Amino acid sequence: QVELVESGGGLVQAGGSLRLSCAASGRTLSSYAVGWFRQAPGKEREFVAAVSWSGSMTEYASSVKGRFTISRDNTKNTVYLQMNSLKPEDTAVYYCGISRTDFGLGYFGSYDYWGQGTQVTVSS
Image (cartoon, rainbow, N blue to C red):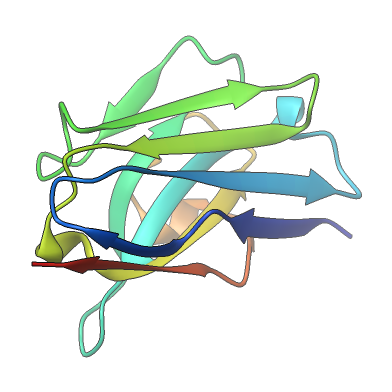
């Protein structure tokens, strides 16, 4: 069984930055692609960013491209999401998930395990 724990969320003003972490226990993250999704109240969970198991490939939603950066440190079994130039519309619960495949990472159904999420609130 694998456990994913997200951290680093909080309240920040528009234009500010946060770095989210996704730490894994029970499995080695280096064997999986990792993605970040978010869900705002009343909305469906949406793709934010993903990184392949090797770290050589990344994908971003158009709404965050150029502002967010996903990276991984396999020595620490952790994946990060650096979020800069935050906007009020980035407010959501952010979830990380892991996938056995590097394909279809923009789709919720491609992921095998999920964390419990961390709240990000951006004030205007």
